[in-house]
Length: 105
Image (cartoon, rainbow, N blue to C red):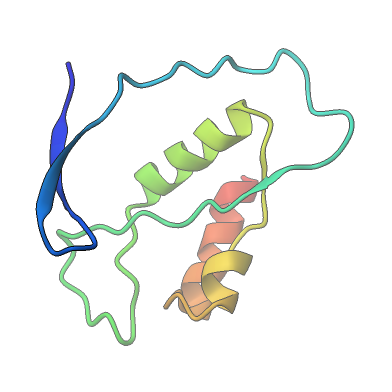
């Protein structure tokens, strides 16, 4: 099933762009041997939670950890909480600690 998006062009017009079928990526049969490859495994927001986003994070922990398991399955390492927290992504220190605890478990 193909999906078509309408994208803006440099001249201000709009043009259709049809996505290709998704590619299947084989899972590695063994860990990487030559180097460590890190993936930026960001957290997944939970849009249903009613929180003050300036003081608390609305994180879907199940989806966040499922995404990490998906990355690990392909042999990637994830630098827990570093990317989101260090680049001003809005992850509170308390949430970063919880992310590290859950991911390491």
